[in-house]
Every structure is written in structure tokens, then in C-alpha cells.
Length: 416
Image (cartoon, rainbow, N blue to C red; front, side, top):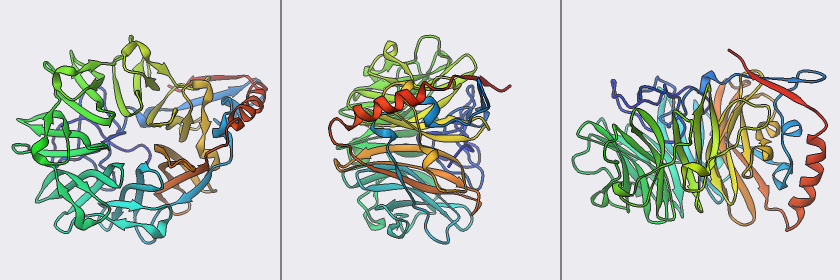
């Protein structure tokens, strides 16, 4: 789903997670959501993104043919609508090889943890028998993590592909908890303990819970995990700071880029972290390699904002703002110039989209997310797929794309 979530961690009425991209006020965190909204962590200021683009010859829409230098990613992507028949809403937030996971909404805007295998018909309802609602936020090696609401308590959760496989990760003494990412034997997320939101790490059981909360932080949140490291954010010195851990609170590393007043890591893989940082008047998608100084701004030339949500094999996904204020699912290959507009491959009727995760099984590259279908009037889970190119194909396509990209010059501004 696109841009209608709150992300400040004040418990009002009832507790809500997720756990990766949420709409956030930069000063106050909130975790409530309105009926019809997803419990996913959304970025700050998403609805405020409104980028306009002017060409030297005419107004142009924000498309890959104009702003991106092509790599293999510029080849045609096949888009599959994963939305199950008869449901109100769906969102695929994570992908591992040929499987996708997230949530669907049933009657009364109730979220149900969901799993797909490449088609809408493959949908599996993972909602535990005793849960009022649930959602999946991360997936790896056939296991899914997220939360389930049982008895009015949000509980960090693990699954292995079926509702009956549900396993409770909720730490003793926590008020609420939720898992956001999984890699190998580790899961990350958050637990509210003593009234404080605390970045959390598990290794498959509730008893394995490790408190990652940095000393001096007002609150913290772990969104990502890979290779024994964890990523997320912590509010330190009045600034939310992109954060990196190596298994303990004492290992906390501040990744907040110089000049940024707000930042977060949302995903990580193979020593790279992606997320966003706020500079001046806009949120910008970015990439790190373990230090604050390694920050790379992925905002395409001529654009004024966006967010990165997923990373795998040197590629990153997220979304950027369009000339009409609409979000467009996006793909990068490590630089701003490599930007590809994934929304250009969507069927007619989709007016807004985001990309949330990326993965490859060696044969195909898979990207998941969601988009607003103006024909059906709802947000629907989406899957982009593309064969992994043969060696050398990327270079040939890149040359052609660069020539095309240089044919026009654009001026971009952020509307007030």
C-alpha cells in the first residue's frame, strides 16, 4: 500500500506494527492505524512528497526512459497481481526466492498474515486460529516472521508456511512485540518493555530475546537483519538515527549521515544497508556500507525525494515521488543514476505503487510491493519478475540506456 500510515510510537487505543515503511511525523512516533490501514512501518512524510518535473521542451512524467541509465534492470519486467479474489486489500511486503509474504484484509479491515507462491490463486492464510489479526514482515529459508494479535496483545511471531506452524516469540515482561525481519537463525523487531519501545533480537524462541536498546536512547527499533548484523533506528539526542548493531546493545553504531536530522535503516544484505534520511526539506532514499560517512543518496537526478525498502545482490528497491504527487515503485543498482521506474511496467489502472522487497533464486529476480488499482478501487499486492540476465547483457543494455537518458534535460522542484 502506498502512503497512509503513521509511525510514531505512542500507544493510543491499540498497538500496531510494522515494520518497515511507515508514514511518520518526524518529532513524535505513533503506532495506531485507522481502519483500512496496514500495520507496516511507513516512512515519515510519505504523503508530503510531491515532485514536479519540467523538461526543456515539455512537462514529463517521472519515467525510467528519462532519468535512468540502463542496466539489466531496464529489461522488461513481468507483473503479476497477487490480490486474492473477494478480499478488501492486500500487500506483499517481503520476498524470498519464488515466495512472497505480507497480509490481506478481510471483512472489517482485519489484517491476516499471508503467503504466496507467485500467483493470486496460491494465497495461503497464515492467521493463527486464536488470533484476531496478523501480518508477515520478513521471510527467509521457508520461515516467515511478523506479529499476531492474541487476546489484545501483539506478539512477535514465526511461521513455517502454514497457520498451524505459528510460533510465539513474545518476550516475558513485554507489553507488546513484533518481528520485522529474519535471516538465518536470527529475527529482529521490537518489544515494549517498561513502557519503552526497544530494538529486539531473537534466535527462534521467546527465551532467546536480546535487548538491543542503546544506552541513552529514548526508543529504538530493529527493522533488518543479515549476516549477524541488525539495522534500524534509535532516538538519541532528540534525533532519530539510522542504526547498526552486531548482536548487542553495546555494539550500536550511529549511521545518521552528516547533515541529516532524521534517518532509518529499513533493510540490509551482504554488508549493505538501505533506508532513508531527511535533508533540508525532503526524505531521500539511501544506501550505506556500515558507516555514516558511507551514505549514498539514491535520489534520481531531478527528483526531490523517496525511500528505499529492500536490498539484494547489489540492487535496491523502494519508491520515489512523481510529477503528479503519486508514488512510483523504484529500482536502483547502487547509484542515483541507475534509477528504474517499475511503475511503468504496471497494467492500466494502477495509479500509485511502491516496491518493498527484492530477492533472486538464481533464475529470476523478484520484487514485491503494492499498488492502487483505480479500476477496483483498492490497494493490491504486486510481484515484478525478470530472468537473471546472462553475463555481459547488463553492459550492452547499459550503453543503450545511457544514450537514451542523455537526450533530455530536466528541471525538478518540490512543490510547496
